[in-house]
Image 1 (tube, rainbow, N blue to C red):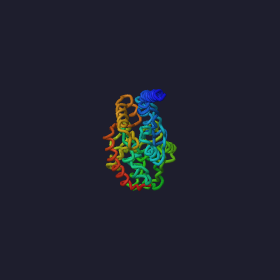
Image 2: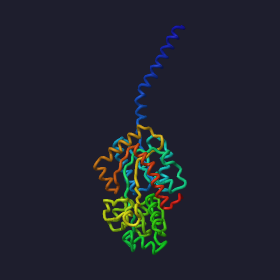
Image 3: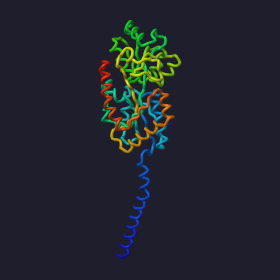
Image 4: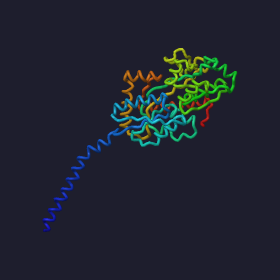
Length: 332
């Protein structure tokens, strides 16, 4: 009896071990499949409203990344506080590659120069993945205004202190408005917007007199005669507006702000996921059809992989803080 009990116990134990081993063998591929990134949808946070060039870029890049990785990249618009709110969502997210940011100069280079209560460190709290391009912009006015050139605008503003309003929906517009006021000694009221589209709507309606729209929204309105370009904010003239002079060549020598856009993740992302995303983005931007679509947004391609992009962000923070100092901006 004792031997039969032992034998039966041994057989039961062996069966249990075999069952566990079999389950583990069967389950191993499942666990491996679950661990492979991405196994579900990825959220791509756009820190501005719909209709902005950052939103359009996010949707274009997101669609392409979906095709590469076989999972949806869903746009989530989280505008407010100059992009800080949206960037904050990504800063707090798990660093697993499932929450990413369409970041840029507003969320990273300029944020600490413009706002007192930025909860994140733009370097330590994020993982730069890939720089995508830069956005040329232009100071524009309503055609009902009595000035049609930047020189005429300056003369009118000096003769009419406090009567003009400069709207802005991002760091580029903010810096430009304040630099123009300080450098040229103008009394102009600054009016912030959550993003550029509502400001552009007010400019077309003549509710504000000047602003810096991005090219995606601004170029069609310029072509339709609904707004008038005064001066480009980049150092060189834009091929899309070859007849519009720059600030540098007219009223403020050496003036240039160079807004940019990029793919960014939370700090601590796995290196292999970062490399997959960076490499995929680089390949996407080499596609002539994609490049054509990006250029049509008024955006200049400027790809940088992770290592180069990280160094660029570090250097660009100093550039935008210098802009803010020149403009006399105190963090608000």
